[in-house]
Picture 1 (cartoon, rainbow, N blue to C red):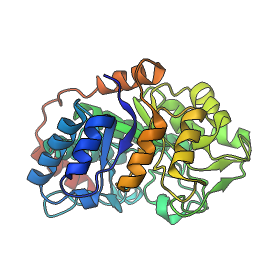
Picture 2 (cartoon, one colour; picture 1 turned 45 degrees about the horizontal axis):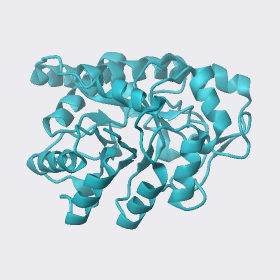
Picture 3 (tube, helix red, strand yellow; picture 1 turned 60 degrees about the horizontal axis):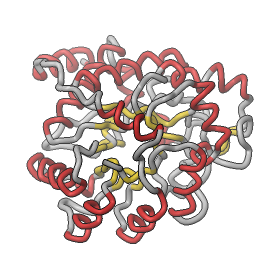
Picture 4 (tube, rainbow, N blue to C red; picture 1 turned 90 degrees about the horizontal axis):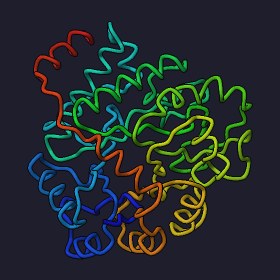
Length: 330
C-alpha cells in the first residue's frame, strides 16, 4: 500500500467526517496526538482505532511524551514526570532511572494504542541552550547524553514503542526557540563532530529520527538542516543515520514560506516524511497535494523496517518498576 509521505495531527478528541474521508483518500504514513486530542484512556483508544481504520493500515501513532513540560498524557490518568535533566540530577542511579522512566511511559502509551514516542532528545544542554529545550536534555556532555538516550530508546523498544530520536544533528547550541524563530549555530565543524553529533552518531541504528530546524554555519549557512541537502548528507553519511527521517513540525515559525513550500523543500533535501501538527484542514489538504507517497522507494523500505520493530512488549511488573523508580528518586 502506498503511504502518504506525512505524519498528521487530527484536530480534536475524535475524528470529524471530513478527516475520516481525507485520511481514507490520502492514507498518511502516521498520526501524531497532542493535548487537544487527549482526555481519558478510553477516548484515546477509540481515537487511535478510528485513525488507523480511516487510513486503512496499521499506522504508527506518535506523541511527545518526554515528561516534564513536554508531556501530552497527564494526570489524573497518567503519571506526571520530572523534566529529564532534573531527573538525571536527582536520581541515585541516573541511567537505571531513565530506563525505568521510559519503560513505564512505553507501557502507558501501548495501553491506549500509541506505539511511537517522539523521544528521546539527544541534544546536549549548554550555556546558550534556549529554555524551551534545556531541561528536556539529559546532560551537558556528549557521553552522558549518549548513554541516557540509549537507555531511553532501549526501554521504549522493550515496551513495544518506537523511539524517535531528536533533534538530529543537534539542537543544543540553538539560542532561540525554533517554534518562533530560526536558530543559528556558529560552532566549527570540528566542535560539532566532537560534541553535538556524538550522541546521534552512537544512536544511528535507531529506526526513526526528527530533524532540527537549525542553521549550522559550518554545514550550510543558508538553510536550516530540515531543508538543507548538505545537512542531510551529513546526517546520512557522516553521522550514519539510515532510518526513517521525519521533519520537526513543518508549521513551526523557524521555516519560511507556505507549508507547501516547506514540505517540498524538506523532501527535496532528503527527509522521508513531513510532520504536520496543528490539524488545520486547509493545511492538511495543501500538504497532501504536495508530498506524494512513500511507495516503491528507499523511504518506503525505511518506513517498513521501522514499523517491524513495534514488537509485543517484553512482560514486566510495572508496579515493581514504579516502586524501584520511586526509590531511585527518593
